[in-house]
Length: 159
Image (cartoon, rainbow, N blue to C red; front, side, top):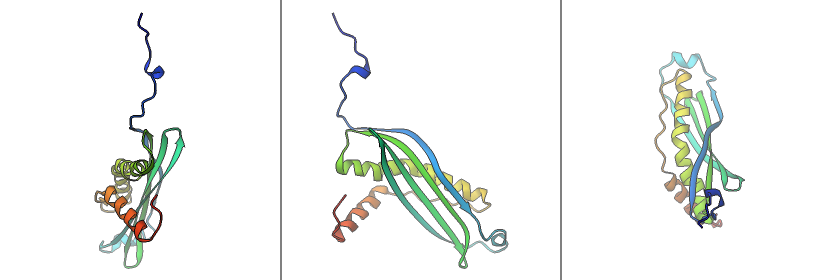
C-alpha cells in the first residue's frame, strides 16, 4: 500500500531558494525649499545622487532589504528639491550562505528593488512640478566588486 505524503511533510531540500515575498515603500520624502522662486528661473540644475542598501534577517529564511535612493538637486547653491525613497522588500532566501548570501543581499535584491524605487523617485519629482528625473540603471554587481576591492585595498577583512 502506498503512502500519501503532502509537500509539507516531505523532507526539506538544501537546494538554493530565492523568492520575493513583498515589495513596499518604507519611507519617502520630498522637499522643495526654494519654491515658488525656483519656478521663475531657467532650470539648469546640478544633481547629486546617492544610493545605499541595508539588510537584516527578519526570521528564519526571511530577509528585509532596503534600497535608499537620494537625489539632491541644486541650482546656484540653492536646493531646488531633495527627494529620498526607501524602497524595501522581504525576500525568502534559503540554502545560500556566506559570500553567496552576501552577494544575493547586495546584488540580487537591490537589482529587484531598483526599478520600483526609480519609479517612485520619478513620480515624486513630477508631482513636485519638476521635469522627470529618470535615474540610469545601476550595475549592482560592479558596485559590489568595487566595494570589495576597496575593502581589500584598505586592508579591511572581506565580509
